[in-house]
Every structure is written in structure tokens, then in C-alpha cells.
Image (cartoon, rainbow, N blue to C red; front, side, top):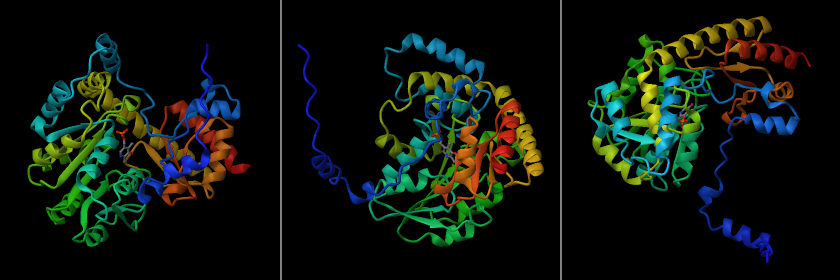
Length: 380
Ligand SMILES: *Cc1c(COP(=O)(O)O)cnc(C)c1O
């Protein structure tokens, strides 16, 4: 006999249960991810193979073939728990940056590292400082601890480092800096970032989020992992989701003083980075040519988009990442008009940028298709 489905919990009881969550949790604004291809195909009855997604700053080339091969090999051990201490991946990172493995904390995406920092260091009522138009996870992770986010007005769309320094008070525990920043693509020179870190009291942590580091031309790379020895209050976070093309696997890392790493490891889930992700990340790190080629293709793509946008009379901010922030007048309308043509980009109204859209640099044919779709969207 088949059991009858249980009667649903009455709506009013469910609402009461939700009310048990602290007010600061109930007030969190949901993170809005880029629209998945399958979702757009369902909603607009489009053939998914004709849709292009330039919405989440993924590497349009996909992962390195070496990473794919490592994943295939690692599937043989799927029944086992991963190495919770990720000995091999930490070893590969330690060798790459010439740092002790104890200074590395791995995350389920670098997003996890950001969350771990707020878990470990923010109490309700503490302050975290970040910039207007900075990455959306900083306010979310801050609010989830009942801490208070201090949003410092942007300067030319980027971080106003002097104003951020001035916003630090005795209640501040953490400062977030994204360099380059998402969604604006703005970037600060290494000496400016270093000067800022140096100016921050040592009892305030500075999280330097470098998710797009691998897209910088080598001359612009601050190599901030080298600063850890001088700055015990610095945490550098990096990602395998962007240039390394492994967004679906969820793996990132933070580099920091070993004592700070020890604290983050206490609040980390024991197996927060899965075995396929660890294997893929090691292989991806070893394929330096793949990353270099991805960087080269990206800068060509930026030029292609810049040229096309200029022809359309659309303003784009100069970018240091693999995406462009463009002013289309009415972001929500143009976003919809692009969706109807099977092109997914990112609206950024939730970043306080309702006139703008963020477009990830795609393959040459994708960039061309986007530009053609944008021309249609702007003329309708
Ligand atoms: C994409 C992104 C991240 C998070 O990437 P993960 O996939 O969690 O590694 C962090 N910071 C910025 C600025 C990003 O754009």
C-alpha cells in the first residue's frame, strides 16, 4: 500500500517557524545568480543549444584538458571521502607561491573563504567595511552574522581607499577589497593596495579578494600572497571558478598568516572541497599555458567588445577582469530584450547600477552575437 502524502504544514505555522530566525537573517536580500541556460530555455521556449550565457564571468573556453583528465581519473575514488586537509592541492599551491601549506585555507569556492572569515571573526554588532558597488557576497556574509556592513561610497565606480580607511572604527573587524572588483571591473595599483593594508590597524582583517587575478597582465599582478609574511591581518582570496574554468566544482582558497588560517579551519566544514575539485585544481594549476592563453583570448575579447560597443555608442568602463560593465540607459529593459534573443547577461540593479549591465567576455563568435543582439535590443 502506498502511503498518502502527509498533509502540508499549515501556512501560518510555517510563517511562525520562519519568524524564529533572527531578524538580521530574515532581512537578508537573496543573492541573485546569473540565469541558467536551461531556465531561459524553459521560460522562453528556446532551444538551449542556441542560447549564449555571458552572465557569470566563467571562462568561455572551459577548463584545461588536463583538469578534465584529472577529474576522470579521480572518479575511481568517488566512494571515499576527500582528503579533508587537501594535502596535495595545498602542496601544489604552496610550491606555486613559495609559502608554507599552513597559510592556505581551501574553500568550496572562494565564496566559502569569505563566509569563513565572517563566521570566525564577526559577532553581532561588529562592523565590516566594503565599497559601494563591490561584490555582493560581502554584505550578505556580513549580515548573516548579525554584523553591520559599512558601505563606503565608490569613487569613479571603484573603491575609495582613503574613505574606506577613514570608515574603520574601533568596532570594525573586517574590511573587504575586491581587486579587480566585480561588477565594475575597476582595479587599484599594487602600491595603492599595499599602502592601504599597511595603514589598517593590525586588529582589523583585510580580505583582498583577487578572484580575477589570473586575468591581470603579469606586470599588474601585485603578487599579494607574498605580503602575508609582513601583514598578519591580510587574507588574500583566489578562485578556480574564473580563469581556471572550474566554477561548477566549487573550489577557491585563501592565503593568510598561519594563526588566522588555523582559526578559519576550525569553522570550516571538514570536507568542504570535494575530491574531483581537488584533483582538477591541481591539474589546472600545472597548466600555466592554458591560463596564459585564456588571458590572451580575454584581452582580445575585451578589444572586440570595446570596438563593437563604441560603434553602438555604448559606454563601457575600462575593465581589468573578464567582463565589462556597460551603460545601456535602462538595464532591466535591455536585459529582457537580450533574453528574448537567447543572450543572457547580468543586470546589476541590485548593485545600485540600474542603468548598467555586466557582460562576460565570451568566445569571438559569442561576443559578435552579443553585439548584434545588443544592437537589436537598443533599437526596439
Ligand atoms: C566570482 C567571484 C568570487 C567567488 O567565486 P567562487 O566561485 O566562489 O570562487 C569572489 N569574488 C569575486 C569578486 C567574484 O567575482
